[in-house]
Length: 125
Image 1 (cartoon, rainbow, N blue to C red):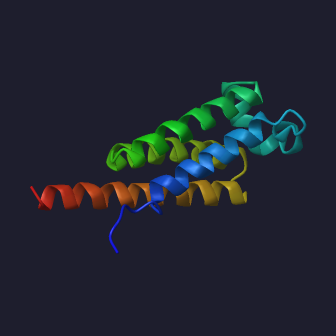
Image 2: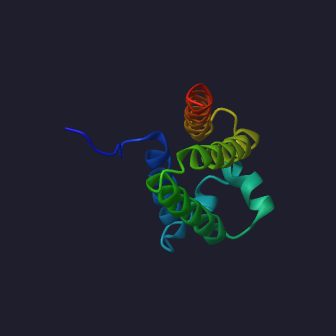
């Protein structure tokens, strides 16, 4: 049985970005006030939580679309940069947080996948 692979790192990372964007857009939960030290660097850049939610949601939708349209190498690079940036912000806020480790691992998985795609593209001409 042949077919397209839909269980890719890019699709999973895009899904995480979409879900987290929707969670930040939820008007009944204020994540920034629940853990002010973790979100302090994000709040210094953009104070409104819903703006971060829109950015995550838009990024997730765009990268999911790119991944499904076989632009996975670009999607994985964008996801690596974005999740790496968020992991850095979480690390600046609270280095012992689990969010720093989780988003850092997501960024590293996207980096590894991007490098693998580049290497296979380079080897195949």
